[in-house]
Length: 130
Image 1 (cartoon, rainbow, N blue to C red):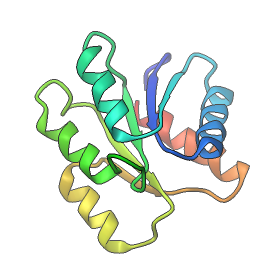
Image 2: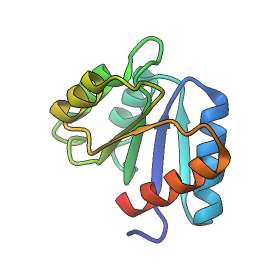
Image 3: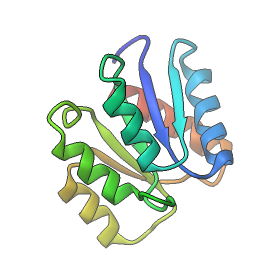
């Protein structure tokens, strides 16, 4: 586990981003979180800032413009980005979504928690992935 990880979060729900970011920084004050409101913005940033790649990428499946599946696929096809661990954080409970994410190279698949204690627990798990 890295002491000062950088985590990129791509999600179009501002409340989910805030809960996750606050939970992560409460658990580790050295963590740096950057948020992106869809996969296209994330990919554009990554491709133009290759000197500052994150330790973990968190994707929501359901985002406008470029969803989590398409974003994950592009990440894993790019030689410079494919080694970055990616986890899905989604409201989907569909087993086929989890299977598809695994097939595309996703490291972990988590359902969005419904409470602050759930986000805190998730933050602890995420920090172990960095």
